[in-house]
Length: 314
Image (cartoon, rainbow, N blue to C red; front, side, top):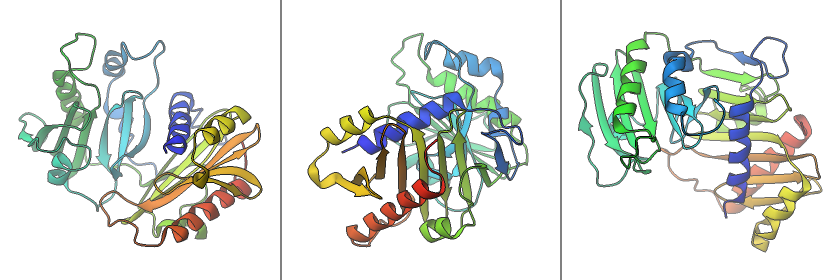
């Protein structure tokens, strides 16, 4: 069952393409550690070239956390299929050698050395049959990923395109690191008790806020990650999701219909207003959660209740 993931993925993509102003005082204002502007490492021309053929309208690149390497801040250049690059914001998790051959990389395909990018670079095939490049640039760690299959079509993103992107980003990467915690004002504090109980000491956090009030907030520690979301929804989303879900996944949270999945967390459908999402789990490189499923479920339900009460619907 992947309805929760699908619903929140759609919401995140919508946020990525519809983020409002970062200006102080705006409804979508981002606050926290300034640090490196990761998306500033790539030119507008390169963004336009990569986005050509993947949508009718250009989309501004947006910062997020790298899936499978959440201590890296990613600039998503093409929202879907995913093409982007990421810079490490905090120490911990897998090193570059592990990232070149670990989660997200096709099994049995060895990474190869790649010259001309930073001090050291390796290239491999990722699990989407696209290209992954990892590089060390001074004391910075860099990942460049394309989930676009290179089938020789001139309209797609090729291996050469990804190598060129990696070279451009590496050449522009200096000593400044990404800010660790940058969140929309409406997100719960990374030092708040609820977030700390869910993940521990937060090392990196990112979020997105759209002009319609939709919000996502993700927090990562050395061992755990949590995502809280409140996105515009409607009754149809609830009916569709629940109709296709097994009865054991259907629950109630604070008087509202909801779905729970041990991989995806909780989605609460608040009438015609919104979908509340919450999940907490070990990061990809940590040991799997050893607690009984009932405890994991109770934690996600408590987080969803917290989001409904403290953030509410957009």
